[in-house]
Amino acid sequence: MTAPSILLAAPRGVSSANETRYLFIVSRREPSLYQYTVRAFARRPEIQVIYDRRQGERRRASQTPTVERRQADRRVRSLADAEIRDYGSAMVRIEPE
Image (cartoon, rainbow, N blue to C red; front, side, top):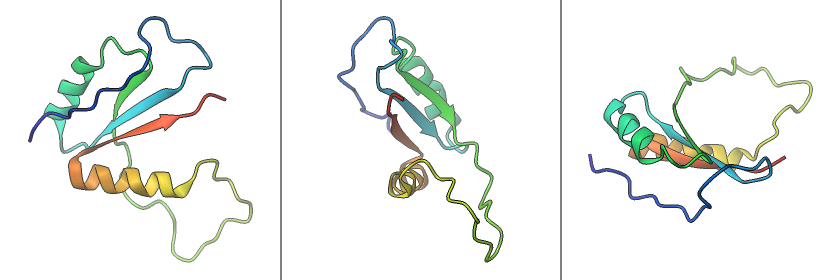
């Protein structure tokens, strides 16, 4: 597997509270990619590298929630899911609150 060629034009230095942050999510099946990206982004405080912690589908069969609790757009999540499945990793932007 080749190393990711993701370079973001984000400011260097101290991260401020209102700065956009990123999660670089790596599949558990890619420990060498995880180690590489941890080193590659070590000096980028706005980027946090994490393993994909999901174990499987959490939703039980045919139970719909009574209250809408989602805060993020599902399309972004499905795109990230597909990238993790197909490429072993995905980068997700976390908007400042």
